[in-house]
Image (cartoon, rainbow, N blue to C red):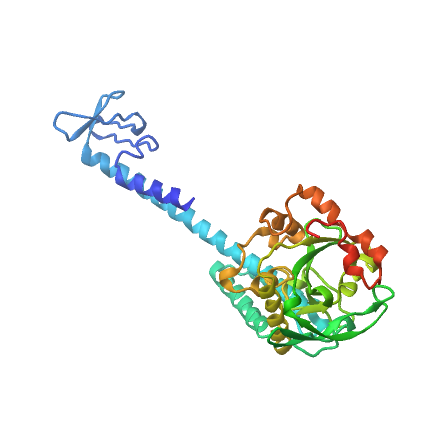
Length: 405
């Protein structure tokens, strides 16, 4: 739109006749009457006069330029006002978006929990006061912007913590030691579940030989909304079994997940390293209303992918990081842990990850010998997982009949 306005400006200022059809100019002295809408630019033989056929009046070119310049000035003023209005509207829009974010930052992250709603409400009322009652628009914008910048500075100063009163299922962070081809993992979760919330915590130490690494799979867990899902990566170590990595939030006791809160600094990032009978069976056998799909991945760099996870859990064990529902979530964190030169192209389905398996299918990362709808139908493993339950060969039973097995 700005390009069109500037183009029109250039046209107006470059031609003295450009506005001749839109402005009416009249002179009464010497019986000369000029109606600009009737002008036909037919120059007289001497080149200094313009003939107006309808009125048969003649106006010297210099006089005509004088009148059209007045019209040009009026148009310039209109364009300036238009640009000023657009800039002002854009500024208010940016401040509105920033104010909504700042309101949420105070609502979710203000350190005194009992005061969070009141502090956020006070900020909202302050912004409203500035908009409605402060006559100087630039001063109102400056004050609002300053308050938002102060809130942003405070918010960025908050640091994630390693030690809080965590829920038992995320109490211990996994970490690993690598010696040649041998990887020793500590705090591998393998809980004994009776219900989703009733379980006996059990952590293991596992020694895995990278020479046994055969392949990798992805579980896609969904719960009602077609737009959201949770991926879990599983590595097949043959006789040493399967090992899963699930990137999640790390809630404290009494804290529940909030999609809006996930946009702020409510949760630390957490990597669950677990046996499939823990992290998969929890979703298929104990949680209600969840579906889990299993796909064989065709990634050629399985060893490199596994070591990326090992590097990530060690970094997180040493230095905690914030979870963010958009920039550092269960899907985008997988991409970010890869070397920059090897990261897959961004796609909207990395955020709206309920369509993540469709993205993998399109890129050939999972089996595409079948139509996608048919592949997804046979990849649903809830029934098989419930039948296998806590069987030692749980991993083999849930893979029966799947492409690539």
